[in-house]
Structures are given as structure tokens and as C-alpha cells.
Amino acid sequence: MVFGQKRVVSRRVLMALLAALASAWTLAGGGSPGGWATSAWASNSVEPPMVPASFSQLAETVGPAVVNIRTVKTLKGGGPVLRHFQRDPGGRENPFNEFFERFFGDEMQREFKQPSLGSGFIIDKDGYVVTNNHVIEDADQIKVKIDDEKEFDAQVIGRDPSTDLALLKIKSNSHDFPVLKLGDSAQLKVGQWVVAIGSPFGLERTVTAGIVSAKGRVIGSGPYDDFIQTDASINPGNSGGPLLNLKGEVVGINTAIIASGQGIGFAIPINLAKGIVAQLKSGGEVTRGWLGVAIQDVNQEMADYYGIEAKKGVFVADVFKGDPADAAGIKSKDIIVEVNGQKVESTRQLTSLVAAIPVGQSAKLKVIRDGQPKTFTVKIAKREEGKVAAQGETPEKREDQLGLRVSGLTPEIAQRFNIRESSGVIVIDVQNGSQADEAGMRVGDIIKEVNHQTVESVKDYNEAIKKVPKDGAVNLFIWRKNAGFLVVKLKK
Image (cartoon, rainbow, N blue to C red; front, side, top):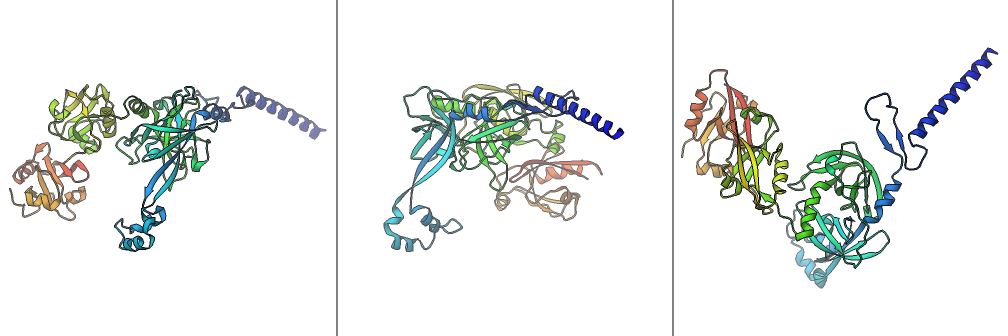
């Protein structure tokens, strides 16, 4: 009997627990399609994480505004197979070209049609479509297929290769196309749910879901890299399609994948795209602001050298003569810390801020010069895409106490090291095992300052080193090819 009583009690306890769980599931919305399930974090003061039970309603709502883009490019020269043999692996002309000309004749001159697939999405009822530039670049024919299987010709309104964005318009008299709402990518949080819709491998209207893995990714695709990284599956054919939040708002434009990576995709933030698309729509091209400076990030050593907070501000390595910054009075070695009241923390941020300022408009730049803040008014010019920065004594016969041998910058030495710097002294030897060697000094480094004292000659360098007491700190402000300005710390 005792055993039987225990068994009855156990059943009652079990039934009570099941009832409590069922009640909790109902309150959480788990019993309805598209509802939400909550984790057992209710005891915490932090809001419990929400996990979507279904993406069906979102996909049905936004799907009609996501389009499939088919392009055709005309290629000459024997098609992909013959073109493969026309060049050797190094990219040089193949010596067997004459053979191919003789035996394939007219086949070598024939035109071949190369089809391509991509995605896009409609942003207004007149049929404007946003996609990637690489989807439609050099295309002779562009077709847009919408959700109801109708296919339309499309024209290119404008392209921006720098951000890989393009704007198309569907050729139709209809003014009632389904559209997607643009969201705010600045509000995205790492770990937040996102949905990608597109045509991977030509499989139209494929829906995949994941989270925001990271923000502000730089992948080397251009000067305005600021990608959203996501693990929502993105594959070839997804390019140009939308990345959406759970409200169905576009927060990114799916653009790139890492071929060797699994579950790693990248999207252009919609906030970056909004201004570009508006310019393409109004004028067919994008104009960007130009300051006229060569810049680099401020690392910890440089921050210590100038007495500022690390990674707060951008170092001006050079000022281009006659350009806006030069006209405003900004000088090399200034540190730009604000643009129009907005704090600057990286070169990429500064480039984007200046690019967004309308050409001809004035901007307030706050800089740190010699430890003191200064403000300059700069009239922004138009950036020409592709515009980039251009950058008599005998050598010392022995290494100094630091283990360095330096020389004046003669034309012969500049030519030997393939540099364009004209001021400072150049390191022509670093003694193995010396302080300089251990600190990372290299042959070819150009020393510009020693402990804030400008160095124009070997004599200046020697005098500056002599002033440092034994065991005193020696801070070398140097320029290094392909690395820019650096600060190297040693002890005498």
C-alpha cells in the first residue's frame, strides 16, 4: 500500500508539472503558428531572448517584391573553352594562338552569349529595382522576373562600382508594383535574427534565415567596406537580394561570400545604400566629397606619442597641394578628431563621412595640432574615383647606440629604395640583436622625428639622440613604405 500511495502522489505531481508547462507555452504564444517561444530566463531582470517559431508570414509578405534578374553578356573570341587556351597560366599571350587561328578560323571571332543570374528587390511602385553592380555590369540584356512569373525588360538607371550597387527600372506602364520598406541598419545588433531572400544557383525566391554575426566588416572589396556579416545562407545568385529584419524591413543588400567559408556571407548596410540609390535615381551617378589628404589610423604607439586616446582620430600623413584641406590650412601630422561635430575614430569612417558631404558644401573639421585642438572650415570638392595619394649627405659609417646606421636622403638612395619621401633620414642598416632590431626597425625606414624634434639631416638625428640621457626614452616617428607613419619606442 505504501508503494501504491507513492505512485499516486507521483502521478499527481507529474500532472501538475505538465499543466504548468502547457500554461507557460500558451502564454508564450507557442500554441499559434508564427508565435514565439521564450527561454527560461524569467527570473532575470534582463528581457528574455525571443526565438521565432516560423518565418512563413514574413516570407509570404515580402516575397512578391523580391525579383530574379537574368542578364546576357556578349563575349568575343571563341567562347569560354577556347578563351581558356588563349592565355597561359601567367596571363600572357599564348604562343599557340597562331595554331588556334589557323585551325579554328572564324570560330575565334564569333560572338558568344553568356547568361548570368542574380537577385534584386523593388523599392517603389514605379518599378525601381536595387541590385548589385556586378550582377548587371556589361550586360547587353537585362530581364526582371517578379513573383507572379511575369518577366520584364529593365534599363540601368545608374551604377556605383565603388559600393557595388546598381539601380534598375522595369520597363512597364504599371505603377503598382509591390515594394519593400527600407529599415535602419544602424539599429541592427549582433545576434539579431535576419532573413535572406534571393535566387541562389537560379533557385528563385529561396528563403534562408540566420543571425547578424558581425558588423562593420572590411573584406577588401573597396574604399567603403562596411559589411554586415551573417550566417543566413547566401550563395551565388543571392547577389542583390534583400537581407531583412523580422519586421520585413530591408536592412542590407546581399553581396558577397567567402568561397572557402561555410555560413559566412556579407551584405551592404541599407543606410549606406540609401543615399547612393537616391543619387542614382535623381542623376544617374554618384558624387562624393573629397578632402585631399592621405590618412592612416592612430595606433597605440602613435597615440602615446601625441598624447591622445588610441583609435580616436585619424592621422594626416600628407596634404595634397591645392586641394580643399590644403586651402583650409590643414597640415600633415594633424590628427582629425571630428567632422561637423561627429567624432572620428578610423580612416574608413572619415572617408565615408567626407564622401557623404555634398560637393561645394563647407565642413567643420576639428584637429589636434601640437597637442592643441584647432577647428578649420573646409569647402568639400568632388572626389574623382581612382584618385590616390602620391607620396646631399653621406651615410654614417657606424651604427649608433641604438644599432642604427642612417643616411641623408640623396636622389641615388631614394631611387635605390624606390621611395618618394624627401625629408628625414633613411635607415640603411640595422645591427642584429640591437635595440633597434628588437624594436622592429627595418632598412628603408625613414626617421622623421626623434622625441618630437624634426629630423631633416643626419646631423639633426645625431644631435637629437645626444640630447637623450642614458636609459632615457627614444621615440622615433618614422615612415615605412606600404605601412605609412609609425612610432617606434626604444631606450638609450
